[in-house]
Image (cartoon, rainbow, N blue to C red; front, side, top):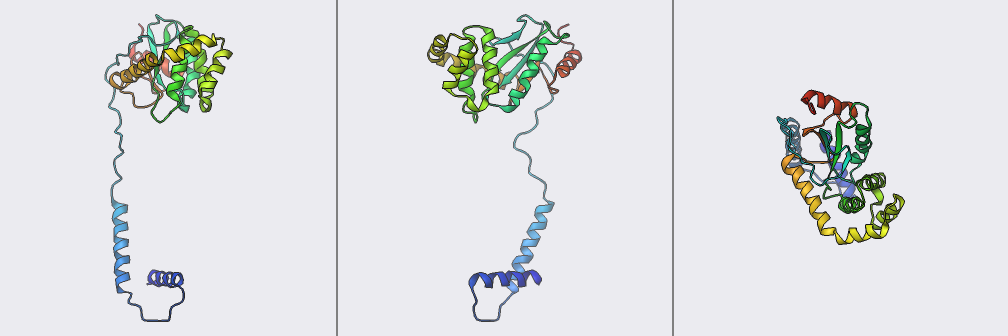
Length: 238
Protein backbone atom coordinates (compact mmCIF):
# COMPACT_ATOMS: atom_id res chain seq x y z
CA UNK A 1 0.00 0.00 0.00
CA UNK A 2 2.92 2.34 0.65
CA UNK A 3 4.03 1.80 -2.98
CA UNK A 4 0.54 2.65 -4.18
CA UNK A 5 0.36 5.80 -2.08
CA UNK A 6 3.77 6.89 -3.40
CA UNK A 7 2.77 6.31 -7.03
CA UNK A 8 -0.45 8.25 -6.53
CA UNK A 9 1.47 11.08 -4.93
CA UNK A 10 3.92 11.27 -7.82
CA UNK A 11 1.06 11.28 -10.34
CA UNK A 12 -0.67 14.10 -8.49
CA UNK A 13 2.55 16.12 -8.31
CA UNK A 14 3.15 15.72 -12.05
CA UNK A 15 -0.41 16.73 -12.89
CA UNK A 16 -0.42 19.81 -10.71
CA UNK A 17 -2.80 20.30 -7.78
CA UNK A 18 -6.28 19.00 -8.67
CA UNK A 19 -9.17 19.19 -6.28
CA UNK A 20 -9.35 16.28 -3.78
CA UNK A 21 -11.42 13.32 -4.99
CA UNK A 22 -11.96 9.67 -4.20
CA UNK A 23 -9.39 7.43 -5.96
CA UNK A 24 -10.11 3.82 -6.89
CA UNK A 25 -6.83 2.03 -6.17
CA UNK A 26 -7.94 -1.50 -7.11
CA UNK A 27 -6.83 -1.37 -10.80
CA UNK A 28 -3.48 0.04 -9.72
CA UNK A 29 -3.02 -2.70 -7.12
CA UNK A 30 -3.67 -5.34 -9.78
CA UNK A 31 -1.11 -3.79 -12.13
CA UNK A 32 1.56 -3.63 -9.42
CA UNK A 33 0.89 -7.25 -8.44
CA UNK A 34 1.31 -8.31 -12.07
CA UNK A 35 4.54 -6.34 -12.43
CA UNK A 36 5.97 -7.93 -9.29
CA UNK A 37 5.00 -11.37 -10.59
CA UNK A 38 6.67 -10.70 -13.96
CA UNK A 39 9.81 -9.47 -12.20
CA UNK A 40 10.08 -12.67 -10.19
CA UNK A 41 9.65 -14.71 -13.37
CA UNK A 42 12.51 -12.80 -15.03
CA UNK A 43 14.81 -13.43 -12.07
CA UNK A 44 14.17 -17.17 -12.27
CA UNK A 45 14.53 -17.38 -16.06
CA UNK A 46 17.77 -18.85 -17.45
CA UNK A 47 20.09 -16.39 -19.21
CA UNK A 48 19.94 -16.50 -23.00
CA UNK A 49 22.63 -18.49 -24.74
CA UNK A 50 25.34 -16.34 -26.32
CA UNK A 51 25.12 -15.80 -30.05
CA UNK A 52 28.53 -17.33 -30.77
CA UNK A 53 29.06 -20.86 -29.57
CA UNK A 54 32.52 -21.94 -28.33
CA UNK A 55 34.84 -23.54 -30.85
CA UNK A 56 34.96 -27.34 -30.72
CA UNK A 57 38.23 -28.86 -29.45
CA UNK A 58 40.91 -29.13 -32.12
CA UNK A 59 41.67 -32.78 -32.89
CA UNK A 60 44.22 -32.39 -35.68
CA UNK A 61 46.60 -29.77 -37.01
CA UNK A 62 45.13 -27.32 -39.49
CA UNK A 63 46.67 -27.17 -42.95
CA UNK A 64 47.86 -23.57 -43.29
CA UNK A 65 50.26 -23.24 -46.25
CA UNK A 66 52.77 -20.40 -46.27
CA UNK A 67 52.04 -19.44 -49.87
CA UNK A 68 53.36 -15.99 -50.79
CA UNK A 69 53.05 -14.63 -47.25
CA UNK A 70 55.78 -12.61 -45.58
CA UNK A 71 58.00 -14.76 -43.38
CA UNK A 72 60.00 -13.60 -40.36
CA UNK A 73 63.01 -15.76 -39.59
CA UNK A 74 64.40 -18.74 -41.49
CA UNK A 75 62.17 -19.44 -44.49
CA UNK A 76 62.72 -23.21 -44.35
CA UNK A 77 62.28 -23.59 -40.59
CA UNK A 78 60.58 -26.84 -39.58
CA UNK A 79 57.79 -25.15 -37.60
CA UNK A 80 55.65 -22.29 -38.86
CA UNK A 81 54.09 -19.92 -36.35
CA UNK A 82 51.25 -18.44 -38.38
CA UNK A 83 49.33 -15.37 -37.28
CA UNK A 84 46.06 -14.07 -38.73
CA UNK A 85 46.12 -10.42 -37.79
CA UNK A 86 44.59 -6.97 -38.24
CA UNK A 87 46.73 -3.80 -38.18
CA UNK A 88 44.00 -1.83 -36.39
CA UNK A 89 43.41 -4.47 -33.69
CA UNK A 90 44.98 -3.42 -30.34
CA UNK A 91 45.39 -7.03 -29.25
CA UNK A 92 47.36 -7.78 -32.42
CA UNK A 93 49.79 -4.95 -31.70
CA UNK A 94 50.38 -6.38 -28.22
CA UNK A 95 51.39 -9.84 -29.46
CA UNK A 96 53.62 -8.56 -32.29
CA UNK A 97 56.72 -8.11 -30.06
CA UNK A 98 56.32 -11.71 -28.90
CA UNK A 99 56.52 -12.92 -32.50
CA UNK A 100 59.84 -11.17 -32.94
CA UNK A 101 61.09 -12.70 -29.69
CA UNK A 102 60.26 -16.19 -30.96
CA UNK A 103 62.69 -16.05 -33.89
CA UNK A 104 65.44 -14.63 -31.66
CA UNK A 105 65.03 -17.11 -28.79
CA UNK A 106 68.07 -19.33 -28.30
CA UNK A 107 66.01 -22.54 -28.29
CA UNK A 108 63.71 -21.61 -31.15
CA UNK A 109 66.00 -19.66 -33.49
CA UNK A 110 66.19 -21.31 -36.93
CA UNK A 111 63.68 -23.96 -35.78
CA UNK A 112 60.60 -21.76 -36.14
CA UNK A 113 59.54 -18.83 -38.26
CA UNK A 114 56.58 -16.47 -38.26
CA UNK A 115 54.15 -16.38 -41.18
CA UNK A 116 51.96 -13.29 -41.59
CA UNK A 117 48.36 -13.67 -42.80
CA UNK A 118 46.12 -10.63 -43.30
CA UNK A 119 42.73 -10.69 -41.59
CA UNK A 120 41.34 -7.12 -41.52
CA UNK A 121 38.04 -7.06 -39.66
CA UNK A 122 35.10 -5.33 -41.33
CA UNK A 123 34.60 -2.81 -38.51
CA UNK A 124 38.25 -1.72 -38.66
CA UNK A 125 38.01 0.54 -41.71
CA UNK A 126 41.72 1.43 -41.78
CA UNK A 127 42.99 -2.14 -41.42
CA UNK A 128 42.74 -3.18 -45.08
CA UNK A 129 44.46 -0.04 -46.46
CA UNK A 130 47.22 -0.69 -43.90
CA UNK A 131 47.58 -4.27 -45.14
CA UNK A 132 47.93 -2.97 -48.69
CA UNK A 133 50.63 -0.54 -47.55
CA UNK A 134 52.56 -3.42 -45.97
CA UNK A 135 52.22 -5.46 -49.15
CA UNK A 136 53.48 -2.53 -51.22
CA UNK A 137 56.48 -2.27 -48.90
CA UNK A 138 57.13 -6.01 -49.38
CA UNK A 139 57.64 -5.37 -53.11
CA UNK A 140 61.04 -3.90 -52.14
CA UNK A 141 62.04 -6.76 -49.86
CA UNK A 142 60.75 -8.95 -47.06
CA UNK A 143 62.54 -6.89 -44.41
CA UNK A 144 60.66 -3.79 -45.48
CA UNK A 145 57.36 -5.60 -44.92
CA UNK A 146 58.21 -6.19 -41.28
CA UNK A 147 59.54 -2.66 -40.81
CA UNK A 148 56.33 -1.23 -42.22
CA UNK A 149 54.33 -3.59 -40.00
CA UNK A 150 56.03 -2.20 -36.92
CA UNK A 151 55.13 1.34 -38.02
CA UNK A 152 51.51 0.36 -38.62
CA UNK A 153 51.10 -1.38 -35.25
CA UNK A 154 52.76 1.52 -33.42
CA UNK A 155 50.46 4.10 -35.02
CA UNK A 156 47.06 2.41 -35.08
CA UNK A 157 45.15 5.68 -34.74
CA UNK A 158 46.92 7.25 -37.71
CA UNK A 159 46.53 4.64 -40.46
CA UNK A 160 46.06 7.11 -43.30
CA UNK A 161 47.49 7.29 -46.83
CA UNK A 162 49.65 10.35 -46.14
CA UNK A 163 51.24 8.57 -43.19
CA UNK A 164 51.92 5.42 -45.22
CA UNK A 165 54.08 7.58 -47.52
CA UNK A 166 55.75 9.26 -44.56
CA UNK A 167 56.61 5.93 -42.95
CA UNK A 168 57.81 4.50 -46.26
CA UNK A 169 60.42 7.24 -46.34
CA UNK A 170 61.35 6.70 -42.68
CA UNK A 171 62.07 2.98 -43.18
CA UNK A 172 64.19 3.62 -46.28
CA UNK A 173 61.85 2.64 -49.10
CA UNK A 174 61.95 4.11 -52.58
CA UNK A 175 58.88 6.28 -51.95
CA UNK A 176 58.04 6.82 -55.61
CA UNK A 177 58.03 3.06 -56.25
CA UNK A 178 56.06 2.44 -53.06
CA UNK A 179 53.35 4.91 -54.10
CA UNK A 180 53.25 3.50 -57.63
CA UNK A 181 52.98 -0.09 -56.39
CA UNK A 182 50.26 0.85 -53.93
CA UNK A 183 48.19 2.32 -56.76
CA UNK A 184 48.93 -0.14 -59.54
CA UNK A 185 48.60 -3.30 -57.46
CA UNK A 186 45.43 -2.51 -55.54
CA UNK A 187 43.45 -5.35 -57.15
CA UNK A 188 46.31 -7.81 -56.60
CA UNK A 189 46.64 -6.85 -52.94
CA UNK A 190 42.88 -7.08 -52.49
CA UNK A 191 42.93 -10.67 -53.77
CA UNK A 192 45.88 -11.61 -51.55
CA UNK A 193 44.06 -10.28 -48.49
CA UNK A 194 40.83 -12.05 -49.43
CA UNK A 195 42.73 -15.30 -49.99
CA UNK A 196 44.27 -15.02 -46.51
CA UNK A 197 40.87 -14.39 -44.95
CA UNK A 198 39.27 -17.30 -46.80
CA UNK A 199 42.11 -19.59 -45.74
CA UNK A 200 41.71 -18.52 -42.13
CA UNK A 201 37.96 -18.98 -42.08
CA UNK A 202 37.80 -22.31 -43.93
CA UNK A 203 41.01 -24.08 -42.92
CA UNK A 204 41.82 -22.68 -39.49
CA UNK A 205 38.33 -21.74 -38.20
CA UNK A 206 39.51 -18.18 -37.47
CA UNK A 207 36.83 -16.05 -35.80
CA UNK A 208 38.84 -13.07 -34.61
CA UNK A 209 42.26 -11.53 -34.31
CA UNK A 210 44.91 -12.28 -33.40
CA UNK A 211 44.68 -16.01 -34.12
CA UNK A 212 48.03 -17.80 -33.84
CA UNK A 213 48.88 -21.34 -34.86
CA UNK A 214 52.05 -23.32 -34.19
CA UNK A 215 52.52 -26.07 -36.72
CA UNK A 216 48.80 -25.83 -37.39
CA UNK A 217 47.80 -26.05 -33.70
CA UNK A 218 46.10 -23.05 -32.11
CA UNK A 219 48.27 -21.24 -29.57
CA UNK A 220 46.31 -20.50 -26.40
CA UNK A 221 49.21 -19.40 -24.20
CA UNK A 222 50.53 -16.44 -26.17
CA UNK A 223 54.14 -16.31 -25.04
CA UNK A 224 57.52 -17.69 -26.05
CA UNK A 225 57.16 -20.36 -23.35
CA UNK A 226 53.68 -21.14 -24.70
CA UNK A 227 55.15 -21.77 -28.16
CA UNK A 228 57.81 -24.04 -26.67
CA UNK A 229 55.22 -25.97 -24.65
CA UNK A 230 52.99 -26.51 -27.70
CA UNK A 231 55.94 -27.68 -29.81
CA UNK A 232 56.87 -30.16 -27.10
CA UNK A 233 53.28 -31.32 -26.51
CA UNK A 234 52.57 -31.93 -30.21
CA UNK A 235 56.12 -33.16 -30.97
CA UNK A 236 56.54 -30.63 -33.74
CA UNK A 237 59.68 -30.24 -35.82
CA UNK A 238 61.17 -33.57 -34.77
